[in-house]
Image (tube, rainbow, N blue to C red; front, side, top):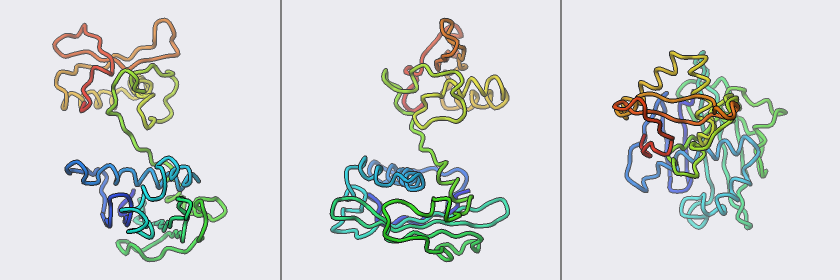
Length: 254
């Protein structure tokens, strides 16, 4: 489990040190940095998937990722620490500096395992320096599996788009149920899988939705009658069981 992280010089975050729990809720006004905090995990995933330069390009340039740009911030620092079921701590840290061309590259990168609990920031072994992509994530460096897989598996979910063009509203392949995609495009397929294979979990999800949306009765999850390979997310209302609504008729908050 991700237990602790440090961020310095990333977007609107000048400096942050925080201990995390299994469930964490961010509360703050617009512009407080909540979205930038979440996007840090997208950066981590890009690093460990050898896509740092692509991530920088998608963000525009290095200045957009540095706190008030390169004139104020000379480097971007981040570190994350994970604890396993045996109370062993493994960590990963990096420092990124901008190039004249507006890219970011590693000034150094470290990784470690069997670190002492709560002595964060120490024990990381230097893996590489002055590279454009992560060396710690490569198999030849034998990164601690706990760190490598935990970071690679980070997914940022963002489901508040329920407009006509949103991925959630579209039909999905009914067998696209290996994992939930970041944009919710296979949410109907995942829920259908849970309904068939794990009905207790599925009922728990419906019960949770009712707690925040009392008007919600249940999901309508059935293969398309004209093409049974496809399925769409639909639901009905408590006061009208015969109703049949699509995902776009949920409010953004729901």
